Image (tube, rainbow, N blue to C red; front, side):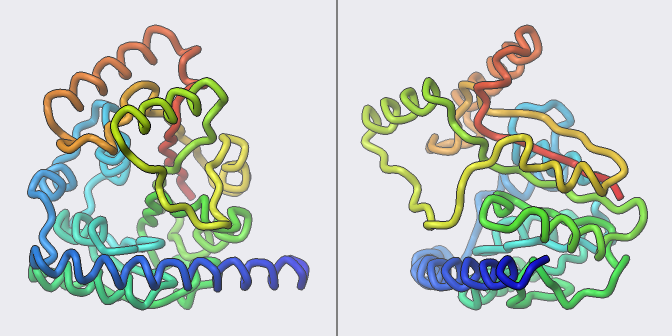
Length: 270
């Protein structure tokens, strides 16, 4: 990697860090009111995820397999809700984030559930302090689109054991049709766009080539054609299940619709 590329990564990391320090500081005060508790359904599904590809988050946990006793790195632990799910499923979690406030919030969530991580640390995922070939799995939940994928793919490959896996899910770029539908949906429901940072950008499938090029096996599945369930009040309610089953059937019968999906789940094995 050139010196200019390294400097660019440092600048991006600095901007992302400043943005997320503020976000997680505010989140800490909101979540403290509820004693850092998660809806029970998240923990239950992390422990026993369905093998049917309906919800991208649940299916990502299915692709991780049995986590009992496994050493798992979570890249970008954020406010710690996924860290808590991983730990409750039996993983020995090493959670890293560029935000100190995010790490503090992660610690409080784990403490609320009396769970002990392997590590919670402020660390740049592009260049970690972990030893080579030391982890069974790496989980990256909606973080790759903030990072330099060529650099992070090499770093993840380095720290994984032979046979180790990396599982991730990421937002995909919207086409013009889906973007128009999204805008109409948000307007009709009185919702706002997510607060994006200046450096993050949704991905295309080609953006995962750095992983495909160095990992032994690749599995990719697209989600969220019409099942935009993130904004529903009940993520696992009846309406959400109806939309996900409709998605599953439509995408199985008409693969053409996959080009309009807005989420991707990937599993790469070293």
